Length: 287
Image (cartoon, rainbow, N blue to C red; front, side, top):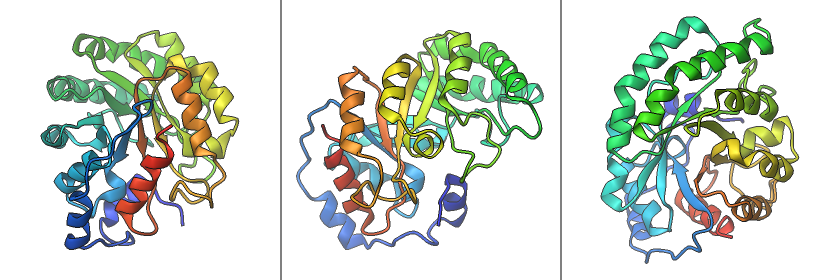
């Protein structure tokens, strides 16, 4: 089964591996892991929605992660209690299917950003997420022009507050049919034309492996346009282990060697012990 943020957030506990309080407490009680620091790792909240956010943040800190990804504005401050940050926030940047490629949606996105970007800046949130939207019969050329116009309309908000807007690359073959920003070249064309240090791509490795492959060369060639990464095993969006086709330590080494100093957030759905799966992913990516 393929999982998406929307499916898991709607189902909450259903379909996700359960974890007991005693098991969680045992994990949190372990000594904090020392990391090499070449990859700044985070964890996506929705994959662990059955675990209270405070407990997830505490465990993330113990295993050497830097933050928690994909939090709502009212949650921005919670990771800071454990020495972490919200590494990617929601801030009203539209929805996966309905966002920047529709001119009629630009005003709502601008209003969302004007409301939430000051809150993100105050909480030291470095990135917020946005999307292209679906094609719904629109050509990629028209969608690119509209998306560029939308980002140009709001980029000063990001620049004024020191926050980066990250438009997510998603696969349209399996999880998000008809999504427009489904290839690196289209996303890079958009952010290059917007030409702001505060407008970049969220390069989701899971999605781009499905659409394109050729991960390492693509990342190296386009790193200046990438502000954030997500992980997820292919196939299935599960653990980063020997059942998956991506050599994760190799990809992480390429990201680190290229000088990337942003965040890599784990966005996979665990099939076993969720916290042990997270720890193992952190170990694997600590290159």
